[in-house]
Image (cartoon, rainbow, N blue to C red; front, side, top):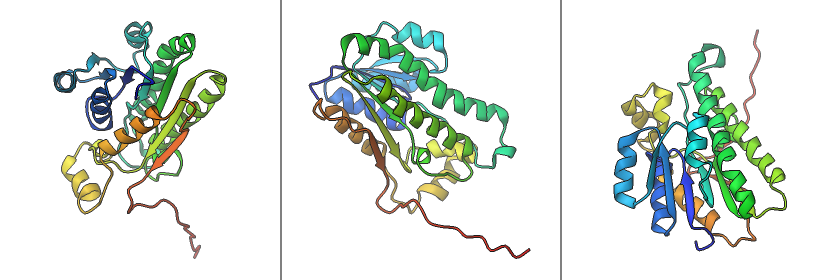
Length: 247
């Protein structure tokens, strides 16, 4: 992974973000790790030697102050939130607002902070972590799906905006990863999450996604992995439903 020397990873306090920080630090990169919670970051910094930044990615001023002048080669936009399952008309407006703020506006804030420097250096790699929900409908998670589809659109537009520059743009769309991220669908009930989504299922692990990120970053500069869709072997997407109208 000699092409790049530094990285910035959001949502680094746990799950995919923490696994990515570990992977990139082990590869010799100077990694800036971003999360809202101080304690997990402190522990991660002690373990890996990463540089911790405690902030909310939706705080534009804080993001610009922390990273506007930072020469970073790789940005991994991983921070994200979801909400309880349910139809849109039953969703708490505050939950919907937070999902869009973090998953879309937060990613945009990070892009605004690092892209100018990448353009100046004509060098960089942006990795946006979307979701299988960005490519396929996700019943009960309309706000989350919408936010990830928006990030997918942002990713596609970025490639056009950065045309002619040596800045690669990758979208990684994982299916179910066993990180307890899904507990947000169960109002934070980790026991219910484990019972209904993880027990008896062969889910992806955070390290699987970190490995995929490392592969994309480590590919020869002539190679841009634009989209990687990652599913557990025993999970499939698709099928046709045909409702019989008996009224």
